[in-house]
Structures are given as structure tokens and as C-alpha cells.
Length: 235
Image 1 (tube, rainbow, N blue to C red):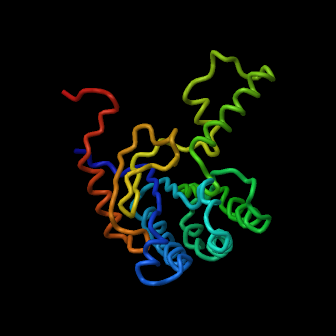
Image 2: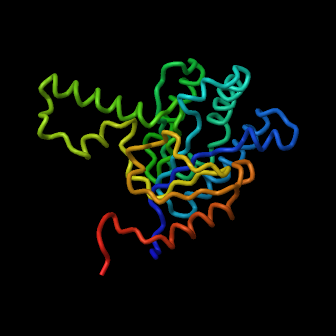
Image 3: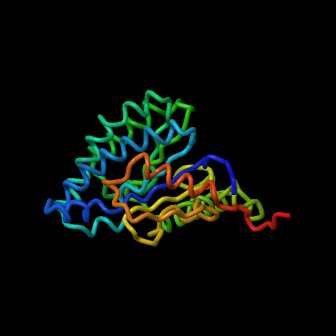
């Protein structure tokens, strides 16, 4: 058992569409409810003294969904970025985005730039929003950056190590301690593959729109009971 509070928590917020369909609603209603839950949980996380929160908002594979749903999600992101996270900013949390910028509209990119600019000097925590994100893409992009440095003569191949890789990710974030996935799926779905190397994984059947502070505390309780050895043997 450990009594530590995780430094970095990551969440795959799954189940919005199924939550809506169970109620005979359009999938977009599930996303709307999910955005409200994210606001509450993101505020609660920093009250727990957790320093970094990463959330899987939209994957590179999500473009395959129905155009109406994708368009709704993009408009929802803009609304959420502009209105829902004032309290996060007030807590002194820095907001960053991880993902590819291609395919994102100018309106979405503008909202992202405003959020990062307004919070760039905040030091009380980090809120990492993974948008148009894929874990394999992140590693590929980091590799390209490193290869370019080697090609330009600013980095020697012998100097490449895990710290260099981490530094060249979309954002240089600490390793994930606890990863939570809602809705009963037991996959990591190409989410933050590099940072998840030694993470404790927590899966719950609760759909994301039904997730709340009590459910988050259950995940923390589970984390506190884990024996984290990182390959070592405790005497």
C-alpha cells in the first residue's frame, strides 16, 4: 500500500454516446453532459493536491464518426474553452494542449491559443487536454524532432535517452501515476503511450456523464492500495 496522492492523473472519458442512447437522446446530449462532468472533476482534482491532469478529449480516430457529431464536438470545445474553465484559471492552473493541429478549424485553434496564452504563467498545476491526439503520433513527432536535431548537428546520437524523448513530446509532462477509464472498456486506446509506462490503471463501468467526485475518490482509494515497485523488490 502507498499513501501517496498521484502527481499525474489521466482520464479516458468514455461512454458519452452510450449514456445518451440509453436515455433515447442524441449522442450530442451525452457529450454536453460529459463536458459538465469534466468541469466538475477538473476543479475537484486540483483541490486534491494533484498537480497534473490529462484528459482524452478527441482522438485522431474520432474523425471517423458522423460529421454532425464531430461538428458538434468542435463547437462544444470552443464553448467549453471560453466559458467552462474560468475556475481552473482562477486556481492558477496552466492549460496546455497535446495533439496534431491539422484538421482543427481556425476557431478551435484560436480558442486553444487564447487558453494557453492566458494561463502560460500559472504554476499551481497543469491541465493537459489531448485534442486530435494519438499516442503513436506523439512518439513519431518526437522522433522527427530528435532526428532533425541530429541532422542539424545540435544533438549527438549518443545523447538520446528517455529524458530527450520526454522533452520532445507534445508537452514535457511527468509520468502518469494513475490512469482512469470509464464505461467498462479495458483498453488504453492509443492514449499517452509513452507517459503510461508505469501507470496504475483503473477501470470502472460507470459511464463518463455519471462519473462524479465520489467515483473519482474510489479511483484514488484503489491507487492508494497499489504496491508500486517500479521493477524493484521490496524487502
